[in-house]
Image (cartoon, rainbow, N blue to C red; front, top):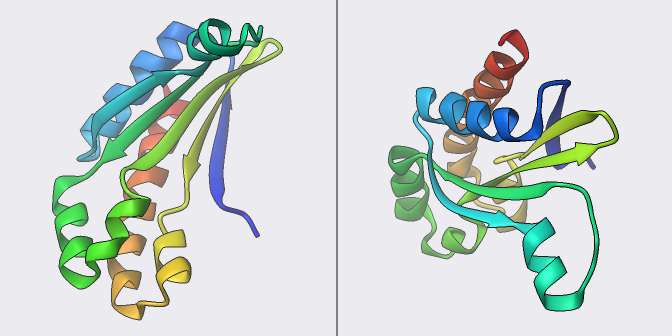
Length: 130
């Protein structure tokens, strides 16, 4: 089961994080949270790792519609987007919003998830296009 969509870029890590936030914003997603896993794991368990940032992205209109259908879907929000260093490249991984349909078995969420998937896909495509 594929649960994410990934694009691979060769730009500097911080530039990719900024571009990812901008692309998400252009497609209706705000970034509600930003977790620097590299910094967090170094501080908490003294683990060294490459750059790894988790962005909690939310499209308010889609989130509101999903919550109207299934209030418990909030445990699956926001949609996580990961920006991570892999050798000389930077991967941007976006959670497939379709998971909220399969995990809840609420078919009414399918069109909302499809819209979210399309918008996230467009944001990732914009990153690749530069």
